[in-house]
Amino acid sequence: MEWWKHGQLEELISECEAIQKRFKRSVKTKKQSDQKAFYRLMLQGQVKKALKIVNHANDIDGKHDITADIKKKLKEKHPKAAELKQSAIIDKLETKTERVIFESITQDDITSNTINSSGSGGPTQIDMDTWREMICSKSYGTHSKMLADEIAILAKRLATETIPHDCISTLLACRLPDWFH
Image (cartoon, rainbow, N blue to C red; front, side):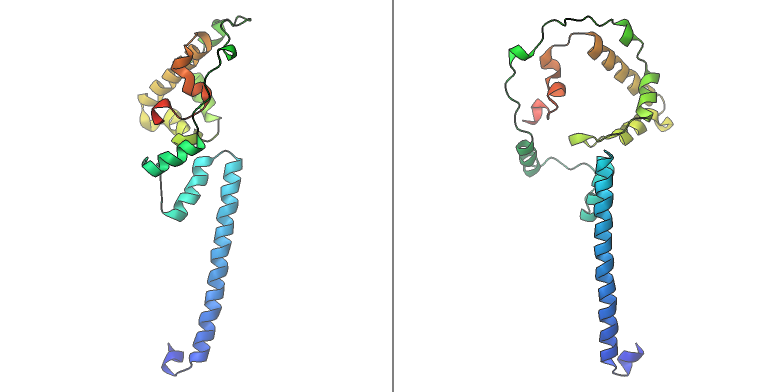
């Protein structure tokens, strides 16, 4: 302020330019740091955490509403599946799997395996960190145990029963659900 009062504009401008140069460098460094963090998290399969870095930069957070534009872009990335070839379906397994192996799957197994798992969430953005929170957290009380129990029941059914392909086609195709198209 003294330079301004005394008309020392050259000194003032010089100082402002020095500050601007430092500011540009710190913005560039922040951007590079974010890029490295995003890359590292993606390699670790922590997609949700990586997306938070991108979302933070864009002031976007959480799950997006499905607008016509987003739906169009997702359809472009996830084209309709090819028609099922009956020759690809095995009517009967040649080896018999003993049901007893899978009957022992319990909610405790689901909980302990969830604690040690990691991975991304795909279109739902429900990654293993979120599953771990839902299944292992005591803050949900009995609901966490009920969810783990239902997952155990589903795992047993998938492993021991013949479930019609139409009922689990989306799961097997690893694509967006049929209602989306």
